[in-house]
Length: 381
Image (cartoon, rainbow, N blue to C red; front, side, top):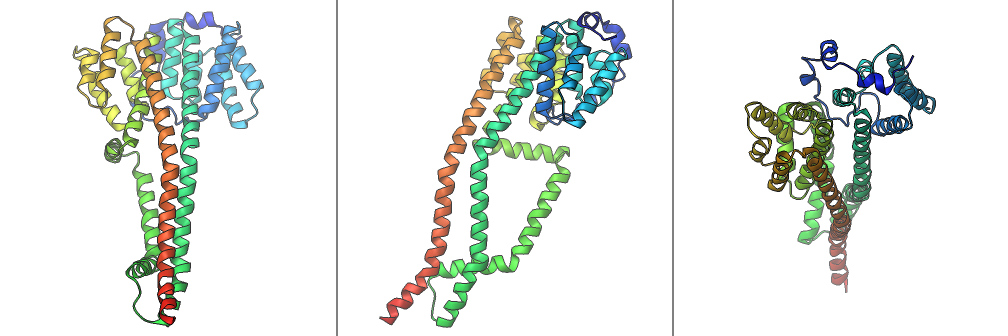
């Protein structure tokens, strides 16, 4: 027999805490960003949460909602995950417990759903999770749309320049040697660059690949994350976009957790473990300890530069009138909008800049190759 909403709402907080095997270990378990799903993509999770939420509004219980989602699923791996979820629910587990047992959902999702079950706001939590993933999917889509064309153009241009310097320029060089005489300075520079690429091209490729391997292997180490994130934040324009993007995700998550009346310290702890951005993680760790010592939330935020003063002021107001969830949601919308607009602006500017850069570089190479020919032609007249 399935478990309906009323059964979930009657879950006893103390009993669920005693049964929770992660009561002491969940703090150390959330070391990945929520976007790195263990078995389901962001798109699959958005669809799952939105479908379950819609079916619950229509009066369907959890078990039947999972069954209906399973029937409409065609992807084999996703069907296996949903079947495991359904089997656990049929055996008497709540939705949050079933998600935890499958091992295909983050602890952030588990605790969010668990809080929703215990507070009677399961449907609100499901809608917020669906909204979270929808926003992430939309942001990724817009980011790819904005930067894909400039990156393709840049890659094509670099390939064309490498081909010219490695294959075309040497042909001209052989011809110039047969004619003899002094070559123009620009031509000598381009020929030297071509010789350098031919002699050290493979070494340069090897070095680049080695750097990529080192970066990939060390990307989760604290020292790499620390210095890489600091370098990112100091990068003009890009750093500001990255900061606003992570602040938007932080605000959305805090809006979700505070909206279901999760304790502030627990909310900060959960978000700290899922943001995967070292400056924000470190700041939230210190903020959490500050609140435990009795400091006000907005005052601990003000001690860290990653949080803008305007944001701190709004959170102060929300804290005083007990409307933190609404303030966080408004901040999320604001930062998400600013990130989107900034990304579009950069993408629009990059296209003409790249075209000009490519034209200048190719033009310099062509001029350098034809200058000696012009001089030779002038000398023959």
